[in-house]
View (cartoon, rainbow, N blue to C red):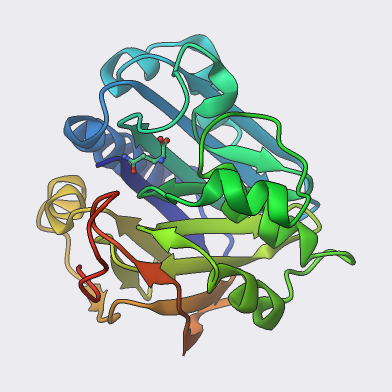
Length: 265
Ligand SMILES: NC(=O)CC[C@H](N)C(=O)O
């Protein structure tokens, strides 16, 4: 498993009470997501000027939220913040005691989280001569995106061609520090639910719909974005309602050693 949760912020002058509310929503989603990933947890925050902070540790989400850096990082959420990305990790490749293996992962100018396992990651790292900083397979996705972001923005068509070589499972969320107002969401063969709120001008995402339900309780105005598997979404800080989507491909495979059985959500 592994859990991805986050908030993509559209441009808006939010008052402190709305920012506090959205911070709380994020914390609640992350805490509920702990059941999907007990080995490590983490979060990243990016701003329009490209500044970022990542905090991750091999501990459960309910412990992470009491750490001072966690609270500092959330405290820095302001009107220039473009995304808060969170992750709870169920380790597959790479020990969590090496913090490099935990998510969010930074690879060059790209920062992201991943749910799934890329079975041929070692091979692709070698074949494509990609730098490697950690042992976790997920780094591959972000190295590929980094390679296709020579001038800042991620070249999505180039990235799609490279992703087509990957075999396994993936849903991922990523952005470039040189283009932090553009968020790429890859909904592949792992669950990822998205919901938009027009007045808040944010998009929430989570690996399980229930995490969003728990976080927003009965607040009105949330609308589900129906996204089929194998979709690449582009969501922009400028206007979170103007979402672009297109198909992307890789070789879906449920378990190592079994034959691909098509797409599984
Ligand atoms: N369970 C997962 O989705 C794991 C993600 C990634 N393969 C890791 O080990 O961190």
